[in-house]
Structures are given as structure tokens and as C-alpha cells.
Length: 291
Image (cartoon, rainbow, N blue to C red; front, side, top):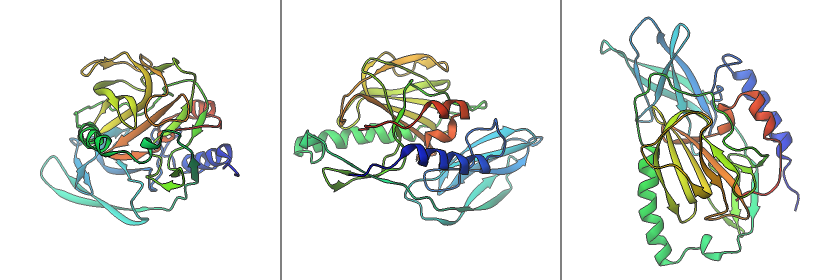
């Protein structure tokens, strides 16, 4: 089977994002595509911060120089075409901003999972998965006001990228949801660190994800870390950027040890690479494997 060349795909993607970036040091990068982030100016920063919504869900707003701007996570399932956000200013005025969701093609990946229950769960497994889904949804929907939104990330673990974001996946030749994070290959026990300051809001053992931690960075920006061998943090714990909170493992649905890292913005899973500076992206060279 011919494997996609992730290095070529990664470099091509970086070139597109760099050309769309509002500033070299401004993260995340502007990439208004399914699985990307759209950045829109809202109002001069001399005014009070406005509030904004996309598809009925509150979105992050931050000050960037002379302007307030909205950070909009675009779900992978959104069709390309016209889109808009609704804005409410501090004085009660309402407005909208239109933007266009562009097209983006993601590669396909076929994986063989030896544990058949991880592909076709039994009835007892399905009950557990349903209960866990409520916890996962609650974590991704969490909102915490944060005036200084930390959006310049560092890689949570040292190692090459083994599976990029957005892959159209097949497990044992059965179609499943697209890959909603990126995988970083690392040995079991390798330290996992916080890519930015935040608060642990959920941690535990999940059927598909294995040992998992969710970190809330504020304003609907949530990160998730799966397949951990060990969890060293508890819900409510405040983490600083770079602080170790877990270790790489191979729990849950995996083909080998690695870290699955997801970034969620307004409950839309988006490409973590958009939050990494070029120096950090360069360390995530193509590898092999994945979950």
C-alpha cells in the first residue's frame, strides 16, 4: 500500500497557512477551511470587548494591536462556502461579519486494529462509550473567561508527527470519523507537557482514547491528550506552559505508543499545527505509525 508523504503535505500546508497569516508572530494562523481557524477583525481596541457567535456558539475574542478580533474554529464537517458570525458590542449594538470557508482536501489512511472490539464494540462497550461521550462533550463545551488568551503553543511532546490532522480514516477497512487531532510518535513514558497555560478540567480512562487529559486554556480553547500511560495532574490543577502533566502510552485504540493531541475552538476540532510557531512545526517531521 502506498503511504501518503506527510512531509510534503505538511510543508504544502504550512506554505498556505503562512501566506494567510496576519503576522509572523500571530498565532493561530488564519486558515478559513474545514478544520481550520478564521480570524476576523471586530472593532477598534479602544472600545470595550465585543461578544461574537458562530453557528449559535460563542467564539473567542482577543485584542490584537489596535483591534479586537474573533478566532473561529471551523468544524471538519462544514461545507465550503459563505459563512458569517454575529457580533454584540458592549453598548448593545448588533452586527455581523461575513467570510468564506475555503476548500481543503485531506488524505486517507487505512489502519489495522488487532482488538476487534475497538472497531466494533459490544453492547457493554457501547454503554460505556455513551457515558464517556457525555464527559467528553462537557469538556469541549467548557467556557472560562480569559482576557489573556494563550494561543502560541509549544509541542506537547518531543517526537515526529506520525499522523496529521484531518485524515479520512478506515479501521479494518471500515470508514470512521476523520482524525480530529494529530499523532506524535514518542516512546512509552515520554513526558507530556502543557503547550500553553491552562486548567485541567477532565482526566480519566476512556474506551477509545485510553488515559486522557483535557486542558482548558480559556474562551472555548480546549486541548485533549489521549493514550497516556500515566496521568500526573488532577481536575482543577493549574498548569503553566511547558509543565509536565502526563506520560506517553498506548492505552485505548492504538497500534503503538504515541500521543494523540487535539485542539478544540468553540467545540470545533482544528489543526494543532496552526497554533505552533515555525520552529516548533519543523520538529514535527514526518514519521510512521499512528493510532
